[in-house]
Amino acid sequence: MIPLADTQFVEATWIMVLKSLVIFAVIFGIVPIMTVVERKLIGRFQHRYGPNRVGPFGLLQPLADLFKLISKQGFRPANAIPMLYVLGPLLPVLSGVMALAIIPWGNVQDGVGLYGIDVPIGILYFFAVGSISFYGLLLGGWSSGSKYSLLGAMRGAAQLISYEVSMGLALLGVIMMGGSLSLVDIVEAQGAIWFVIPQFVGFLIFMLAGFAETNRTPFDMPEADAELVQGFMTEYGGMRFGSFLMVEYIEIIVVCGVASAMFLGGWMGPGPGFLDPIWMLLKIFALVFVFIWVRATLPRLRYDQLMSFGWKVLLPLATLNVLVTAVLVVVT
Amino acid sequence: MSEQFPYLKDDSVVEVQRGPEPGGVGGAYRAFGETLRGLKTTMARLIEGPMTIQYPEEKTPVYPRFRGRHKLHKFEDTGLEKCVGCSLCAAACPADCIRVVAAENIPGERVSAGERYAAVYEINISRCIFCGYCEIACPFDAITMGHDYEMADYDRENLIFTKEMLLAEPLERTPLKAEGE
Image (cartoon, each protein chain N blue to C red):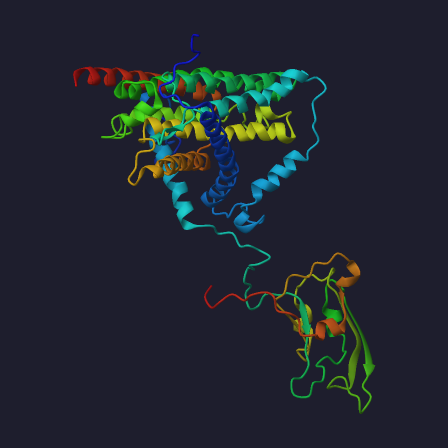
């Protein structure tokens, strides 16, 4: 039998199932915490407290939001295309959860690899799966039969082509230095020095593209709550809208996870082996903080500004970075 | 300048200061610098901490001369009301919200220190504009303005404050500003 995919470390099936359940549970536990932490932090950035009424310190706020979203009437516009309209929020959830699989939380310990799966194509999988979410965005925007949604979806498509290339090129430098596509190997290669130092330009470009990938300010044109009233999500309500929002946070975790694995030494950190996932989580949270910090600081760009920024600044910079890295890797 | 605008004095011409042109590598570099400056600004706000006053729990302190809910006073030694029912406050009131009905004091069961007392003393708080003229008009300092500003109610009838309510020691729920605040 020809294997569908080659994996570097194979475990028993029940371990794989257990692992995926654990990752699923942990991430879906983190997402509500992230929403409340983000709102509280944004508040602090603006001299406010943020939500602090529901439960101690407002920690039950996401629960209240969830109940509100679930109890909403399931509503669909009359001129929406039913099947695609339902598919819209499903695809991003799928892609977000699938991309979680390659985030490494630690190396093989006691015969269990602390990651979903270690595919040798590693980072390509991230790009392949991550881009699926834009199909959801496009389908959702187009099928809801509203001009705001369509505009948001079109902006999403325009945004996708302007940052995705630079994002790939930004990671190419790391891949050349690490000599592998597998995230686990790349983390292992950062024993001496974290790649954020030699690949600082790549790190910056990846983070900038990450803001665009997750539709966060300053690149949240597909949503643009001020002009497009949430863009592609305009016609969605209840938990369908909720899953679009949830996906945004899952994607932030994925992008931050990939960034910390590629640039910040992944699970590397002092202390015994069982602390590895904690280190990874801390690094992810540090990057999530940067995401929130940037959201509290920068206004939304115009979409021609993003296009020209993507093509005229990020792409040449990323290409130059790749060229210099390639020469240095060959020379040394 | 003077050749270009011969009809203008030199110092009346203001040259418009323009920033560097946007775009290009220099523009991107400057935008990056400004972004970092913005990030620094927001981070400083985070460190400063919130300025919100958590209203129902925490209240804005008012100045000592703040004009809030009215108070009627009694003499501390005899316990008699200071108000003699002269209706000067009602006459001074521009909003016409004070109603006083005076009655003669009966010897033996005196209510006020003077000859007459206020049998009815009502202030329609929903009409009051808190100008403080009643306080100025009163010859006996019988009515003063307190510091409370939380007088909202669901029912307009409850907003007509009677003499008993105005005489009763009101709960001072409003903090005063400290010296020099």
